[in-house]
Length: 177
Image (cartoon, rainbow, N blue to C red):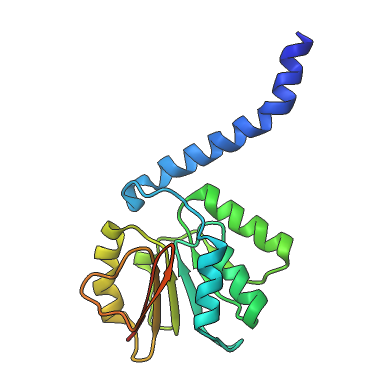
């Protein structure tokens, strides 16, 4: 019996974390079309932040922000207080928790970004799968203003021509509206 308690004490929290991850993924499946929560690599974020510069007043949003890693990095480097939208409850919790730990004032909202007005943002960051980008591309055409910068990790925006492509393991597509 002591062995069982020891096993649960050591592995119980890990099992609970995996359970929360699985439940969060299942809850988000209807909107994400099977895309899993995957953090953007630090190398990609560093490449983006070296290629572009922002002022603290920049209105930035991360669509499907996951654990909020990009939001924290842009805040640390440029003082930008961005916003993020995340529908996966586990990823949303992680973003809020990690932002709190890092004392990052970025605002993370548990909402579907497809239902949000994106016209107020000057920079839009996303790391989304192609099927979601297919839905997002016309929304961005309709709602963004000239000069808006759109950053898409790994996958291009259908029907858009990149302004810049960064090669960091997988491509990072940067568009200017």
